[in-house]
Length: 348
Ligand code: SF4
Figure 1 (tube, rainbow, N blue to C red):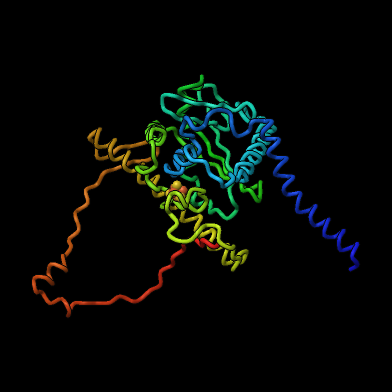
Figure 2 (cartoon, rainbow, N blue to C red):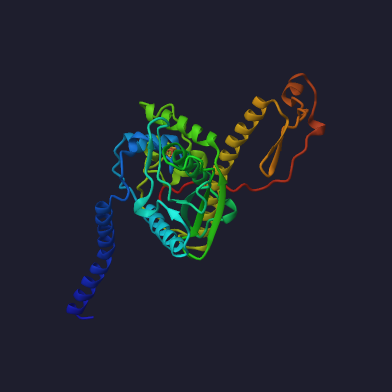
């Protein structure tokens, strides 16, 4: 290749690479002109879309400056997916109100919660339905949907719609997931309003907003897997050793194994989130039944019961050995097995 041609080729490569910068810059300008992500002072409220997430992260987001630039990529995917779904539903004559630029932006000083529901479906004036639209990574297992934090977001949205708009009788909502890699794949979940969830989130928001330091706030992201994407890992202290910006290693990246590990980690995060939602709901159900003094209760299409469970019998082997009982003849060793552990690769 002669010198001129080499220079022309390298200039072309530079220009091509620079398109990424230009796309990001252009999108920032469009969003700044449209005020896409900043309608009000978000720091004054617990936002419906994040209030179910790590409480400590929410505190850091409001109280510390971070030199790690916020990555708006997922939010952009979400807003473009939402636009696609809304336009499609409107074209199909679905009576969907308060969408896109006309969305309800609700901030409630009493509950310290805010929400921006994606729309209100109004087939029946007496039965308005809140709509939340989400895009999902194609590797997400639909069996893990709906995600607990999305149900929480919808519940908070319905609660604020009921208390702050003319749709005070709203009793239900829909979460609609669209596969970000194939827009024809959609999953719908119908959710009944539960006032207790918004009340619980209001308490979380107030705790987080009133805390002067993060010290008393749990590192909830550790059990949900949220630390993976958190820009506060270092100050939060969840990184045991090593700086986060070590040289990137690409070992196995892009392979089938990488896809399996990523899916495993993502599914584990969803399972942990689902477990914490189940635990919270279980505590609510049991406390409500105890308050009503009932052991069995029909609830909609379900029946919930409280059943006595006998305590397990166990043996204190340590005490027995200390008391001189020889347990050696009864000792057994199970078959050995291998445990899978997946941790974070701080070099990647
Ligand atoms: S690093 Fe994890 S625990 Fe700490 S604030 Fe972030 S998500 Fe929460």
